[in-house]
Image 1 (cartoon, rainbow, N blue to C red):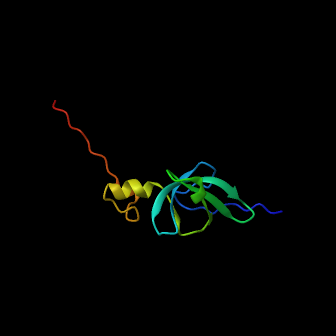
Image 2: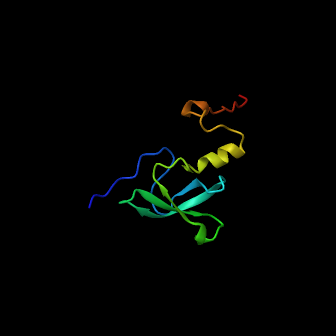
Image 3: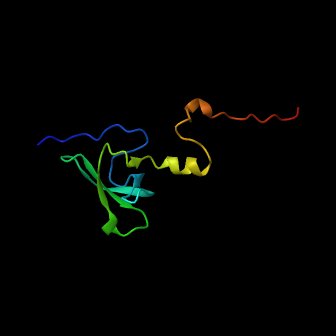
Amino acid sequence: MTQWTPPDRSGITFEVGAQLEARDRQKTWYTATIEKIDYDKEQVLIHYKQWSRRHDEWFQWNSPYLRPLERVSLRRQGLNPTLLSPLTYCSTSVQTGV
């Protein structure tokens, strides 16, 4: 039996307990956690936070309905995560009187 490796998806860690966002059947995005990983079927079992476990769903690793959790906080700040790059961030210097 071959064990497959989850894909390298920026911002998503494929391990039990990892947090991410998942889109449900009603096309709404929710904060979720990975509950199980099926390496043979290349799927993860997702639990939507603050919802009953009966709503848990299996997703393929490469599903477009899974995305990194940090996008939520960036959207709340009014930032577009697809436009941000490491060069976007700058620090401000504090000048002191001499």
